[in-house]
Image 1 (cartoon, helix red, strand yellow):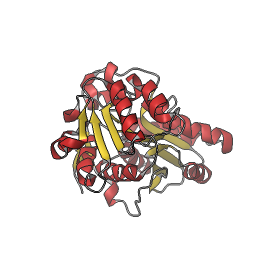
Image 2 (image 1 turned 45 degrees about the vertical axis):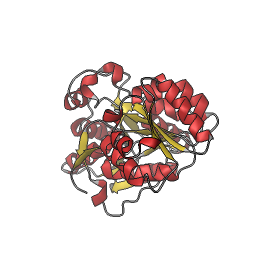
Image 3 (image 1 turned 90 degrees about the vertical axis):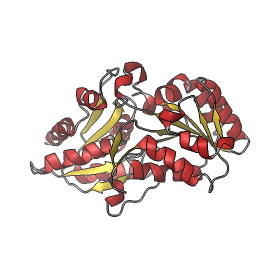
Length: 315
């Protein structure tokens, strides 16, 4: 499965692939099907696709009604609208009654690029983590996204799935022993000096940072934490005990997301140095995806520097 594909593209393909197997799957969109990549599902299954227009709150309410009626709705829009504009509806209409609906936030993070600060959603992990019983998921590549969609179709309960805009390399299908399971992180590479716990696009960045560190004699473990909630506490604690330092990496705010979840767990159970790598309490900036990621330091070089800091804190 080598090659490049955006996780939003892999998501759209997976919806079509699994549609016959899951006849209760219903797909809703808020006038963005070409961007969220639900357009192919709409073409193949028009009777199961609902374009709700630019009315994200209404769409969330419709998804809640479908779930209450025993269907399996996937409600799609940009992350800034799914987690931001519709937060109250997601919380009260889907989270509170613990309905079997999936909220899909496409174009998450700052790699949305030219859409600019108003559309760069870096708060979604923190917002969705706060909703009791909400599963929060951010796959790292096309292969993992396909498996995530299949797992969510089998899952019972409210879930938030984040998609990314840019095409990225597929690599998880070539990692020996890789196995996808909701709520379980995956150790992609072993290491002894520190552990990098990453999610989404930053997993690939973490593997590149690991190579930079290896050239300096620093051994970094890389963990793919595709499920941010529930956090794989056992795996995080194991990494802390065995490597003594943790760096988290996410294309999101360092406040309340993956970094917050890991820091909270370790502070209460096994305190070790924790360095958070992500967007530092800032709004986005307009520019190409590559330029914006570089501006915010979401690169292998900056992540490697965060790792050196974490290792130094052990001494």
